[in-house]
Image 1 (cartoon, rainbow, N blue to C red):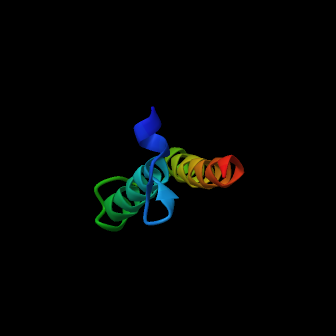
Image 2: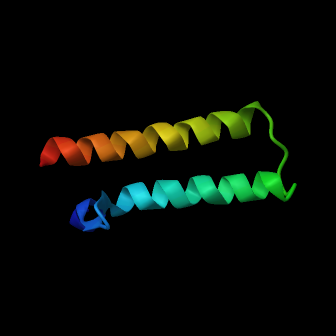
Amino acid sequence: MNLLKKEFAGQPIVSWIFQILLMVLTLLIINHYIVDNIIVIVAAGVLVILTFASLALNNHDR
């Protein structure tokens, strides 16, 4: 678990993972591999919230 709290380029690794997942989701929608419906929009919102939460928790720990 300590590995996920380690920082890379000023951000925790878990935040990078959430951002990469959001980019992959975006590319899947752009290339029409998945349809953008309410489930995908909610999933993207959850990824954004998790990204901001991980950044906020990291700043709180400093």
